Length: 222
Image (tube, rainbow, N blue to C red):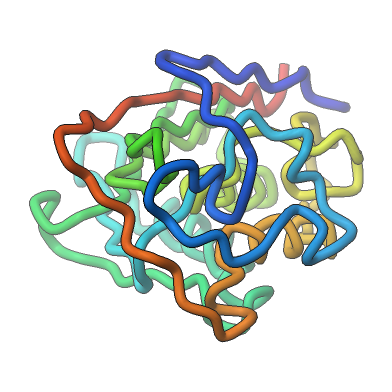
C-alpha cells in the first residue's frame, strides 16, 4: 500500500535555494551550485540547509514510549546516510538532551514521521532538529525507513523528491525498504559540497539574526 503525501509546513520565512547549503545569501562563500552534483532534486526543495560540522550529536528521548528495539531500528536508518556519504555525514549519540543537536522521539499512536528544525535563514546553517518517528504497528521495515527519511530532513534536505524511487520521495510502499539513491546522495552532497570537493565554506555571520523554525510532517502510511 502506498502512503499518502508528505506535507511541508513552513512556519517562518522561505529560504531561497541559490547556492550550497541552501542559499548562502549574506556573508558566506558559495562553494557549489545545484549543477555540481547531478542528478539531484535540489530545485524541487523548499530549502537546503546544513550543519556546520560533523558529527552531529543525537539524543533519544527516554520517555514511556522509548525502547532499545526502536532505537536500534532508527540507528539502522540513520546509518544509511553515513554509509552512502562514506561517513561525511555522521552522528554521535549523547546521554543527555543538553548536549544534543538532534533529539529523537518515538510516537506509538501514529505511523507518521515529523521533523522540525531550527536554522539561520541568511546562511541556512542548522541550529537544532527534532525527529518524531511513528512506531504504530511495530513494523521494523517501515520504522527503519521512516527513520532514514526523517534523518534526511534532519541533515538539511528541506523538502521532497518527485521521483518515487528516491528515499526522500514523500510516499512509500509499506514493507518495502527505502534505499538512498544517487539523486538523494547528490542532493546531500550539494548541501555539504565543501566536504566532497575539498573547498572551504566561509563563516556565516550571525549578528543579530534570530533562528527560525520549520516543520515537515510526513504521513508514513494510512
